[in-house]
Image (cartoon, rainbow, N blue to C red; front, side, top):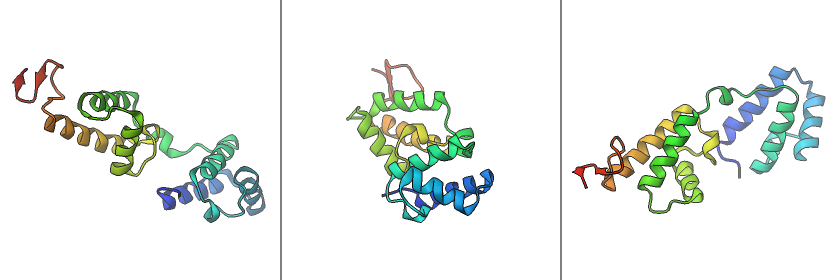
Length: 144
């Protein structure tokens, strides 16, 4: 099932408008890329991403790319995750991001969503006895 369905449908309709697609051209693109006649009929993320690829190929640039999280934020998230989590797998990190932000993958995080994840991870690190502001040799309560 699509997560953040309303947001994704809004992005699709913004793309249609920005590209100046006629209804006929838009429906042809939907059918060819995703196998549906209406964006409301998209049933999964595979269909959504196929449509987004087609829209990008036609020249659409989603705004979220401009406002996406920085490489530094992604690295900081990875570092905090490795420091404080019990299960250090990519799958468990993605599950935590989904719980906090409703976003399926770290690469789709906005700056604001990345900040939420960072704050949550800092809290987890502190509860685990690590001070994320100090080198590895120090805990939240001083030297180890």
